[in-house]
Length: 17
Image 1: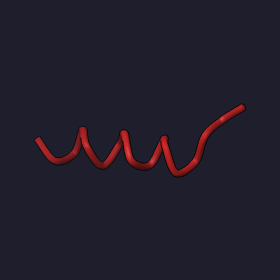
Image 2: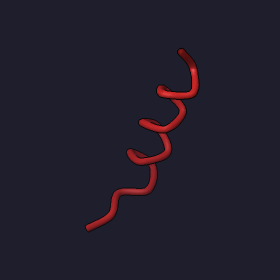
Image 3: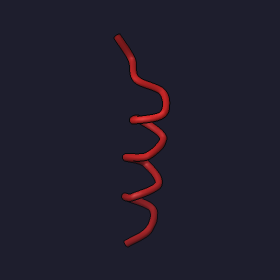
């Protein structure tokens, strides 16, 4: 269950606004 965590971190590091 590390892929999900990596996805969340990526989205947090690259916030789409």
